[in-house]
Image (cartoon, rainbow, N blue to C red; front, top):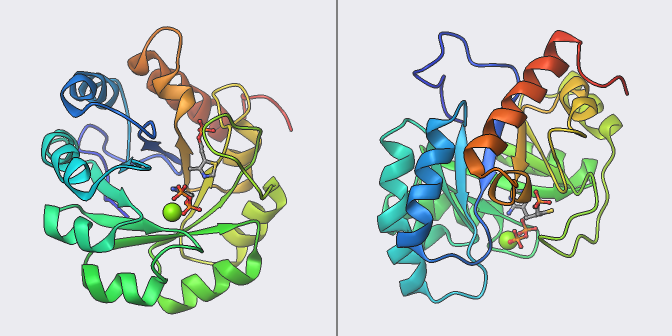
Length: 226
Ligand SMILES: Cc1ncc(COP(=O)(O)OP(=O)(O)O)c(N)n1
Ligand SMILES: Cc1ncsc1CCOP(=O)(O)O
Ligand SMILES: [Mg+2]
């Protein structure tokens, strides 16, 4: 996973992982991404375009990837290892129904980031970690409108994982500034969000700031108790 954001001497123990909306027009989305990344600490951006052609994904990568990489934010492509490699992304995220981890790794190479969806499964996560995944993702933690979530994870999974394993864990699904404290305290290394940033009523910059503040409060022990 990415190193410290250059704006901070020490990265926080839990960082933001932005996932893009499932459909976007790259030129229109570019200023929103720029504002979000300039608003605070973001470790990663995942381009998650569903039901788009390979050429649409290539075009989106060409416009959006430099915005992240110029800011030392990792740019990860969802679902498409070959396109990730071709377009110069920092890595790829694969799910249990996508290209299997080992094949994805062969395609993107040893230095790229490969993350794996593990739903609520300790078994999937241990297999992914053993195989060499750079992070495992658990979820959905809360109800979400962004994806039909068939699996539901709870903070005890994050606690178990983070106490036992070195491989970082990402929490995803319905996460907001108001509900993230238990996940941060349970040991999530990254919080992956869509709607809490892109759907924030005051815009994506406000979404990033609210989540950064909520993470900091939870780490300091002043966030919601849970
Ligand atoms: C960080 C992160 N976690 C989970 C997912 C979900 O991946 P997947 O199960 O393959 O579903 P789709 O996102 O492809 O619909 C993710 N993309 N990112
Ligand atoms: C991609 C994905 N995988 C599990 S839930 C989810 C969507 C997360 O979006 P939101 O943060 O808007 O709930
Ligand atoms: Mg997938």
